[in-house]
Amino acid sequence: MARLDHVVSTALSVSKAEARRQIRARLVRVDGRVVAAPSWQVVLGGVEQVTVEGAERLRPVFHRLLLMHKPRSCLTARPRKAARRGGAAASPQGSAAEAERTVFDVVPAELRHASLGPFGRLDKDTTGLLLLGSDGGLQALVTHPSGAITKQYVATLRPGFPLADDAAERVAAGLRLADGTQCAPGQLEIVRQGPPVEVRLTIHEGVNHQVKRMIGQLGGFVDRLHRVALGPFKLVEAGGRGLGLGAGELPISLAEGEVRLATESELRALAALLPKDRAYTELAEAQREVSAKRESGKTSQAKGNRKKRHRGGDEAAQAEGEGGALAAGLVWAAFRRIETELGVARSPAPEAASADASDGLGEWAVVEPVLDRTAGGMPPPSRAALQRALLALAKRRPDAGAGRRLAEALEQQASK
Image 1 (cartoon, rainbow, N blue to C red):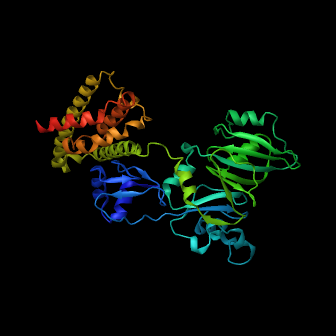
Image 2 (spheres, one colour; image 1 turned 45 degrees about the horizontal axis):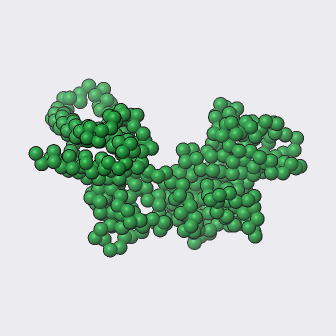
Image 3 (tube, rainbow, N blue to C red; image 1 turned 90 degrees about the vertical axis):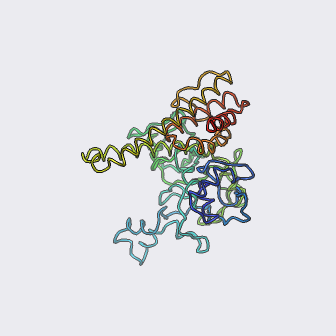
């Protein structure tokens, strides 16, 4: 994935500021739908088509996603890091160099690219499905616990280390590891009674060495570990045999050490895991920007001579702050009038407004360009709070056209 402003900037060879201007002016469409949020996440690889009014052809943004059946004795690390880990022993001769080979050595030369990175990490002797790609947004979706992407492993246990009788129940309830780490609920089932015993463990996060630590907490010891599924993808043996496909799972037939490009249908399957609201992160960005400015101000103030050196700048900032507060006050007054006209209860405090009210994004897309013209000095925190309140209002009254009403009120207010 990539931000829409980055895609437009790259495709048209224009600045990010110009790209954001065109997006907010509602000149950009994603799969035929107008998107007015510069932070909207676009799925690359031809899955979603971005068009700009007046532009005949857009230069595509580079994208590559690889599926690998990771072999044993192979580090999930870049070659430089692998060399540092190997130290003096990682000589270019003999078995030491072979022992420190990486997943990037497994990728065929024609598929390699400097921007490729692994989506998560498998231990050196762990085999199974691994994704590598150039898309940092998809990487975050797959690896961050908030994505809750399913990961399924088959572990072969060492004889003499039986699992606790209540192992499955403890995993289903959320296992607590020895160091106090609380794991999210998962599923554990016996695949083969053995010897050796094989178990299948399904988790939805990626704590360091999580599977081995969970099995150890349950009394077992992992001799071999193999990842069979990641998100919508599931490894199957040659001929289509495997552990059975669940709903929405795609069979991936790869021999150990084999690598190939993801198909369009596989890219779309990953895209289907994306949250419905891909632009809401813009609120968090605005809040982080304001927090950073506040912290910067505190640091400068602690030096004791800020006012002397920047008196003129402080006066300008104060005037700008007063203008922004006035703009914010007028906008909020218009918003409250809209609430009254619609006959709904007053919106909750901005902090309590639902972040899941993604149905109102279209309403915000109508208001945002008008807001830029009529209240450009509105402070980012107040603008973010207004967006949250508008989303909450649109969720309660989706048929009311609250965004259109507010845009018209702002235009009338500006013309007075």
